[in-house]
Amino acid sequence: MPSARSTSNATATAQYLGWEKTKQTPTVLIVGAGIAGLALAQMLRKQGISFEIFERDPSPTVRPQGWALSLNWILPELLPAFPLDLPPLATAAVEAELGLASESAFYDATTKQLLWRGGNNSREFIRVNRAAFRDWLKTHIDVNWNRRFSRYETGPSGLVTVFFEDGSAATGHVLVGADGIQSKVRNQLHAPHPPPLSTIPVGTLIGEFDVPSSDYAHFLHLGTSFFIGYGNSRRIFIAPQKLGRDKARYYWLLFWADTAAAEPAYWTELRSKDPREWLDIAREVVADMHPDFRGVVERQGVEGLVRPFPVRDQVPVPLPDGRVTLIGDAFHPMTFFRGEGAQMALRDALELAQFINSQIALDHNTAIHSADPDLAAALKRYADGAIERVTTAVLRSRAAASENWVGIPEPPEVVSGGVGGIPV
Image (cartoon, rainbow, N blue to C red; front, side, top):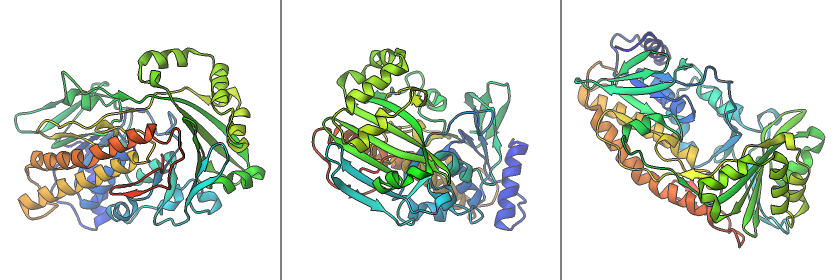
């Protein structure tokens, strides 16, 4: 049976919609309260569908949520899918405190020649702080914290029960794995042979640093939300995590082509090095870059270096029939070189919510009646469509990880489902 937490979310939904809910809709269990899982919860809330969402972290602030991400092509269809009682999305923007519009710029890393600049229209492009965006998505959502997924079981009636490491359990009509690139739901769904992740042959180093407001003019002139330098088999991405009135936390990601980086031994060796050696490597990679790019790395302190990580992806594979499905990185992790990963995850949430709601309405002539619709059919239509949509995006993002290493890129080309060159 759905838990009290599910009833709480359902009651909040009923209050938002303005009607008194007398019957429960099928309950959707969501494992993972990241961007994809929370977005799905909001969309289900708007449509009056019961849900329960679980997160392994003990609290929303126990670990960093990443830096920032770009939203562009998803905006026109995303915002109408959310309830109207959310704050303005602009409150989650990197530049919110300063009241600036999101903007990006691309340069030749050696000469600093401007290749392309875009933005300045919040209806077409907004750069959001990841933690602030997650908080925005949590609005009116009751998350079950500290619930680490252990396994799930599907009963004879089709109901799915999720078991957690603390001994608790929850039962619902649908299970959605939104638990990220190392998804345990995905691993069980594809057991005993879950599809492996692919490691992209790209070396990476990362640093974080503070910028006082007195130095804002220099960085904002280069690119308000982020700027990138390309050329000679490497690229550098520099961006604010959040622009405050007094100071900002910036970060840089340095990438270079390296065939050895596709092997696990490469990362074992790189991570075993002293951070001072990471900084030496980074300074060598940027040695012939323009001072505006090189200087960021040269001034970097060892204390701000971030443990390097491999860039991985996975072409999505067909899901078994049933009432368990996946969204976001749990389904199709992709590189961040085109900025499509988060947006495709949001599209997953949007389409999955629509398919579930449509199936309920189809079987019972209303989206809010209690019953047992053919949810497995809805999940299959969602998954098949997502695979067709996302496979191309994963491969585009993989190609973008290695293209333009030698030459200088052309301005981003608008393509179906994404905008080229806009990274996360």
